[in-house]
Amino acid sequence: MALDRTTSQVLFDNGTHKCISFTSLVKGEGVQANQFLILDHDRAAVLDPGGDLTYVPLTMELNKYTRLQNLDYVMASHQDPDIITSMPRWLVYTDAKVVASKLWARFLPHLNSAFMSDRMKGGWLERLIELPDQGAAITLGESKIIAVPAHFLHSVGNFQFYDPIAKILFSGDMGASMVKDAARPITSFAEHIPTMKGFHQRYMCSNRVIRLWVKMVRQMDIEMIVPQHGTPFVGKEMINEFLDWIENLQCGIDLMDEMVFTCPQ
Image 1 (cartoon, rainbow, N blue to C red):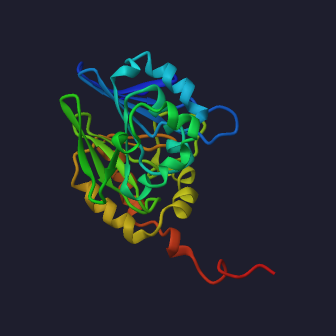
Image 2: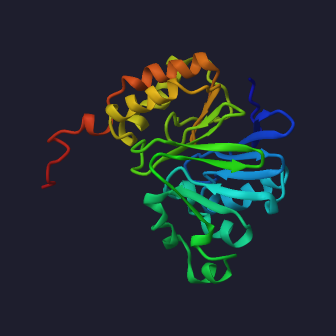
């Protein structure tokens, strides 16, 4: 499946169901991040919409595919600033509900100013869907989005979102890469490893958790893994190369020792 290099890339489209990624909305000093739109029978969900850097350009892009009145959900894989700090704007200017881990739900109101809270449509609790650790299936139009557990990869309350129609796993930080052109397909997995290795060694908790995740993913029918940063893995061959590599990566607490935990003089 070929992906072009425009601001938005249509990852899947069967006429009634679409998945679109936005790869170049972050400008200036912000870390490159991808945002995603899933449409089914004119109902919409936005995944990991980001913060103030992306809110305005993202809404402009969304208007090319749908109306904000059709937005049912804003889904957050975890709590990082590049994931969900634009939440107050979505609560004020749309009727969307916020989907997030139950572990982070109690902290998200800290993002809301009193001004935003006064303007918000409906009460905070009425607009929040708290995900249990086991995940959940969330109805969108005539389809479902599956919130897949990915705890400690890298957040303690972390979810990925699986679209069973498109067979796409939106994987958050798992599989993330630091590249200049996030829309350019991977042609050599071996050459792609240096863009991922340091990030995963630091941001993923441990190899034990990774192996649990890989075991789960191998049982799923996935044609594309699309991370929140960098380039997607397209096709089962490339996905399996990634799974084989990440399954054996030592990371996080595996690499910590007393040299790190030394009080500075």
